Image (cartoon, rainbow, N blue to C red):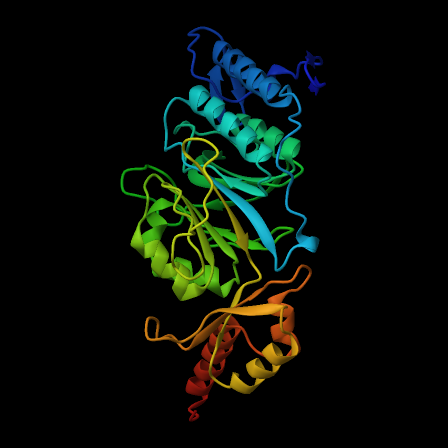
Length: 371
């Protein structure tokens, strides 16, 4: 157990060795069994002390007076959230990469980030359980800075291994996980049987896809079906234009954690991306912004805009440059929510319109009816 004050750390009550799972230093004589894992005593001790050192380093950071506070969403227009993509790369030596990740998480926390995402298997490819040494060390930072963290690891689950992104909540608890659906050739891992998930956070709904998942549109549509506001994409590479296409097609933000090119719901890379340090990218996203189709809505939209000048604005509309017959609305007055106004005037968001139309048209097809 670790107790930290502003500038000192005290260690007491060392946990029994039987809770230690993994290390990389060989001790050829004594071995220890934990569940499905057999390892050397020397390896266990080594990983234990590395973990304790990193945990102490995380907790012993002195308070920083000029740290950026987290967003006070109730006093801002829309529904804003600050996200960080920590692009320190795939794989590497576990202890060095975990130390680098912890340094980046300190930066993100001091920048007022609500949720930070690390890259795919960022701390190497030796499997460990959940919770385990890596998620436990990262969880200390999540708790310290009151932020969510997506921590991708190679997971040992019984006798199976998965490429897994673990979601850690603001209290430092494991809130969920996503196991990679389309494992890349040669990874030597088990395939997820659970599919795409959505996670409820205190700022909105998020989904996670990983690396090679990029190539399968059905996964991205499932994120839309689940009403995700943001899709995080930890990866070993940058992804490129397909990500932009999915963002505009499904009207959610995408946070790639390969190259840090955080993508707006318009399909364009966000213009205002902060870079507090090398390989870290931070953006503030408004999850309240909403598209609506021209179909059946022209009079209702006119009435809403006439009755709420200064509350809501039209960011984009059909034009010669963009022929999509959609409005994009955003709130501009603190405390105002664009989606609440749309609901008040019975204006469906584009996603709601598309989902309802798909369901009703497919039902008519099934019943042999005309539309």
